Amino acid sequence: MKDEMTPRERMSAFLAGKEIDRPPCVPLILNHAARVIGEKISRFARDPAVMGAANVAAWRRYGQDLITIFTDTAVLAEAMGTQLYFPEDDVSRFKSPAVAEPEDLDRLEPPDPRSAARLGVLLEAVRRCVDEVGDEVFVSVCIPAPFSTAAAVRGTATLARDLYKHRDLARAIIDRAMVLTQGFCEAVHEAGGIPALVDPVASGSVISRKAFEEFALPGIRRIFDTVRGLGWPAILHICGRTSGIIDLMADSGAAVLSIDQITLSEAREKVGERVCLMGNVRPTETLLEGAPETVRAEALQCLEDAAGSPAGFILASGCEVPIETPPHNIDALMAAAREWRA
Amino acid sequence: MLSRLFYRARACKGETEVEKDKTCGDARRAELFADLAAAVDGMDEQGAVAAAHAVVEEGIDAYEAITGGLSKGMQTVSDKYETGVYFVPEILLCADAMYAAMDVLKPHIKARGGGGGTAVVIGVIEGDIHDIGKNIVKLMLEAAGFRIHDLGNDVPVGAFVEKAREIGSGIIAVSTLMSTTMPGMGRLIESLASAGLREDFQVMIGGGPVSASFAEKIGADAHGANAMEAVRIAAAWEEARV
Image (cartoon, rainbow over all chains, first blue to last red; front, side, top):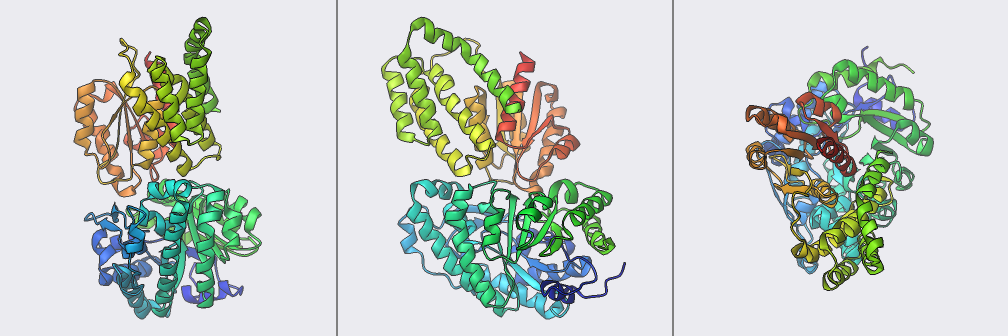
């Protein structure tokens, strides 16, 4: 099956509700992009030339319908002062929090959303992708939402305790993260990219519906006001379990919900009228460990369950395509979208 | 469902304590155990510490206060976690309360001849420092009466093997949150085999990216999808050993 549209044409038409040649397919190729050009993750994560070249090469290799630039969920927290360390060939790890003691918060200088820590790296990678292939495919950046950034500013376990013990501090950190996130969304837009939000720490696998509503949702809403103001559709990815919060995710103002551990049938029933769904071929069991035929079967099942969802469906991986995923499994996912005819 | 079975198993173990309660007629002891359990379940660190001090001051057996009070409280917490009532923040705060009370009780635990639980060597595999999940599993196993050897995070395969050799037999629980470190788990199984220790240990793996099929692939004995499941598996193994 040959495509009749470029990914850019397809996504434009799809988001405008027009007819398209086949369902859009966006495996979340993030750090795996480094493997396409044989690079170490630590170079990919810190060198804009490598990050840009890897994402361009991955797109040329796989032809997915959206470039998704991302390396870790701590980039904004790092800009706020969190210390990370970078293993040679793995994603960054948390070393020490920007806010160890509550009073540390007052000492934080507002970071420059265009240059602090690695923010400039991401922006330069966006520009490189847009320059090279932007006329054929949209380039997005998966930006950590304020709650996930706050977790990396404070340390996840510490923030978790703060939700009970230091509620005002938690709110203050989330607010600071929110302001930086807004600025960074604008910077991504100026670079020619689409700001998308990822909020893994706000997952239903981690916090309760009540905590999501109180601490995560307000920040997501405000960022999406900014994103819509810039003229982009609001895209929200939350991995792990989301059965208990998917209605709230749809309330966030998102146009697209990228989901992981929830059946597409359930998601479609609960919010399919309101938002476009995106998902959810299993990253580890299927993409990393499965055979191409397994990937095909699961992808076709996803399409079966959700291709007719009222507000639309994008075939995708449930979460990040694991770094060492065999390339032929990603090809099999793309091929399933081309094979599908509604 | 399995959780019910496990709970029943625990409740049976506790029956002798209940019997003693009756024969001693010590309603106060039962009351303090209930206070400990309620404080843990209620994320009440101060309440847990106060009840633990009362246990010590009134000369009540500290070990029984852990198994009959703190452990029961954590079992309720586990059930709430499994049924989606509690999440990570709640688990952490319950754990804080439990550990605070445990710190008070620990120095007063009398040595028990040969009674201890099965040894569990636990750690996050080399290359990963994410240890919240591991700590929750550790906590649950500890509450369930296992003897824990916590190797921490970013643990080289060799360190697991060395500890295994030292303790002779038991369970090894190893976790990771990162797909890149998963091969280390396979190497651990191989190293245990070449050290002649594979038959003496049951190995379970856990953490975000690993799965039952991966466990099977590398020859681990089980995959614990969450903390509760890890405890259930370990309890089943322990029972099979006895």
